[in-house]
Image (cartoon, rainbow, N blue to C red):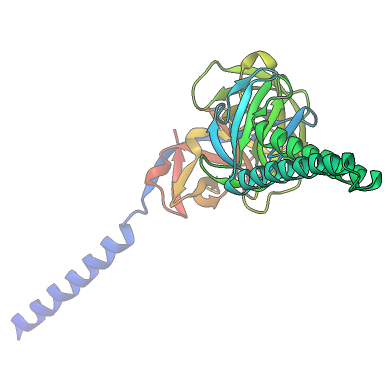
Length: 339
């Protein structure tokens, strides 16, 4: 009996001891360093991608005067050309050659008929009116032959002015109908660069802003002013357009791929935090905001950054304290103490 009471007493003591351990367990507290979110002006640089294209004026389309075959492409796309330089060489098509041969045959037949009419008139067997009709027919046939020969013999397409070859729309050996555009030439010094721009940034870009442009295929980088920004969104790229002037001395041809560095100031009213405060969860940026001694996760949308600080466009208010050191070990709602 006495042993039973002892066992019960030990069991109660054990239960009492376990309950005391649970009550004395302390909630983990993380040691962190904080910084305040404050409005500030940031200067960031954004990379843009685009191409060189013809300006508002100074372009010419070279078309095939007659049905022809592309025999030679003397100046490929991007080539610099001088006035009168051969761009594309064309050769008469089989149909055109047949037309010339037929016109020559018709001209010979008409000339022979005219000569015969003259002999018959001399013998008194044909009237003057008939001779005149034969003469007119011979002249018309000769003119047709000469016209076709001239047109098929002058098929080379040459640059009307100095510039660059922007486009070649026919391939070597292809048959092009008469009037078909074969090449496009842009005048020297009349090129501009078109870059895709995030529509959200359109209002923050000002004409006259200098951007640094680098030819993607290699070449010397240069600085050019922004001409204008078109807010209309391209349905394929979903981007607006930024235009910059290309100096004539760059020797860049139309169609050349370009990249650019655009300096972009922040709006100045959004809060700015140290870049070290920014964390990432599968592409979603977030920060830990400390309030009441606890850290709370806050998803944010970022804006401009200068490598040291980042603008927060959504998810954070000026004056709130964010964790800049110790954030990787935190969980939402965890207690913290500052260093």
